[in-house]
Image 1 (cartoon, rainbow, N blue to C red):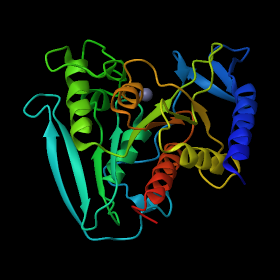
Image 2 (cartoon, helix red, strand yellow):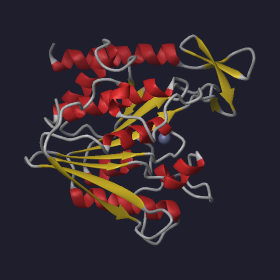
Image 3 (tube, protein in one colour):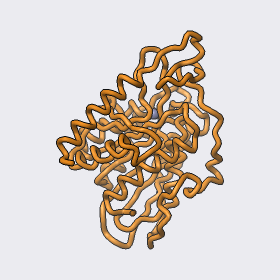
Length: 294
Ligand SMILES: [Zn+2]
């Protein structure tokens, strides 16, 4: 199929999905109906099912056949915000063969666990060529406390980009990772998140891919979206959204560094293992496109 027709099909699919996935409050306001399924609410979002995954002991093979090949690589790590209570490890996976550079940031929002659980699993992979950087989680406070925000002051790290070395906690963390991405000049950046519907006239954001720029990756992005829509990739069709919000890593890295960032959103109403498998499938698709795995 020509790319133009695929793009039109993707748009049609996405419009149909938008119409079909708007959420509505059920008669009992403790629940919300999404795609015809009723979910319990917990405050403003859906209630997450109990996690069926222990990330301390989980391995990639628990979630499907992802990255099962083994290639010679050198692994090392370094730290952002070193010596502070917000210190973050960046794992660097370097192939012996030259190739693209991909930078994966997960856990900007600490309570969106499937994102940084996926990042945690990705630290273990090997790649055929190029260099992979993985942060999981970036928001160590939020991950530990199981909250969205990055510090006690309830600052949203994903509205703090590009940040500043002498700004508030969110701005300092944002600045540290933004500066690191700038210096590594990756070909592509992943930003792994999750979504909860509010149920009050809001759109359903998970499962969704968000971009601000598709410079150089428009064909791959459309192919990937299309693959989810025809049932070849992930557990259900993904929609898309653009641009990323002002102050987000997606918008800031896309617009100021001109590096494409794809934010992956999975739905927190689903079982954890399904959400991780979907995140892994998207990352696997992109790394395969770059020839870094197969
Ligand atoms: Zn998020």
